[in-house]
Image (tube, rainbow, N blue to C red; front, side, top):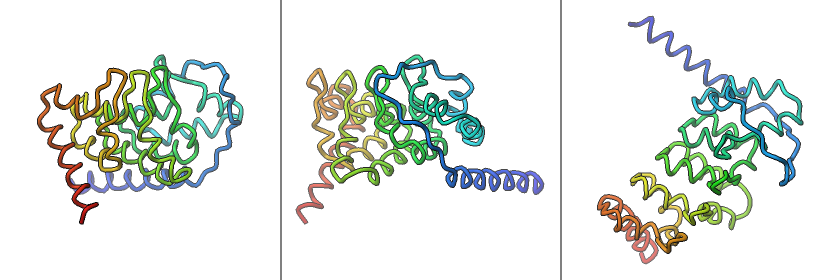
Length: 224
């Protein structure tokens, strides 16, 4: 038992050391043009992002040229148009998400073929860890007005990330999003439905309570 604990601890320490190493690295891809054609993502890289294998993923990225790196990061996508960051965020791959955001922050606002941002997919999948990583990165990226805009971005159905969290019943994640912006609760999608409306429509009492309590607490804070 003691040997097993020691081996596990050593593996964890090595993983932490590798993470620090990749955070200290520098990647300089060529910035793509908006009209660059999309290409199918390499399955191996997709799996690395999905499974949070950051050491393997960034080892591959380190070995390619600047032009090829740009292709992998900005033009290679899954069949749904998802970037590596979409894949990592929606699967809860926290370390890959952190590293991709650090080295390639433009991915944060990239959309797939349904206009979903990485935040949409993370919220819809109930991935609180990567949602938090995305929110924290957005707060420190760009001007003060950029953060609310990031939270309020809509997909082709007019849904914000909060809509997707509500639709899929992720109340804790919904609380996290509403805590950042009360406006999200009232934002209407293409069907003129707000997250609050959807919670009522779905008879999701827990979700409705979460949204209403968050709104009430914020109002009380502002008044006091």
